[in-house]
Image 1 (cartoon, rainbow, N blue to C red):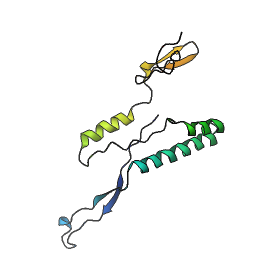
Image 2: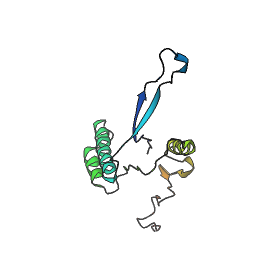
Image 3: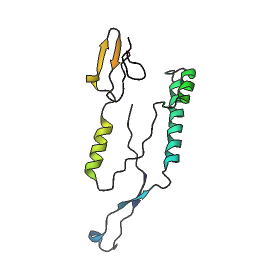
Image 4: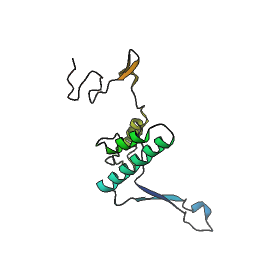
Length: 142
């Protein structure tokens, strides 16, 4: 589990302007931002599918995952890979950028949700039932 912040455009260095005879009055070089275009749901879905394939291929190549398991994961409706392009931070909204970066820097696991049951480690997810004794509907198994 990890988060990535991606800039939705490119930055261009702009050379400074000014009178060559009056160096103290010269305008310093700057940066110009060119926003991306064509970032729609289809483009995001394509990026998500490509990332999923490449990451699973890398895991198989490094011996971290069996090829048949990777193939099965590609068929899952909810494979654990998602790209969310719904958050946009405006250019001068420093507070929102700091909140987003703090969120992205959080660890993927909360230690207070992890416990040991015999030889197994069990992680309790707040959003869904993740107990090994739960069935798919969330009811406790007998």
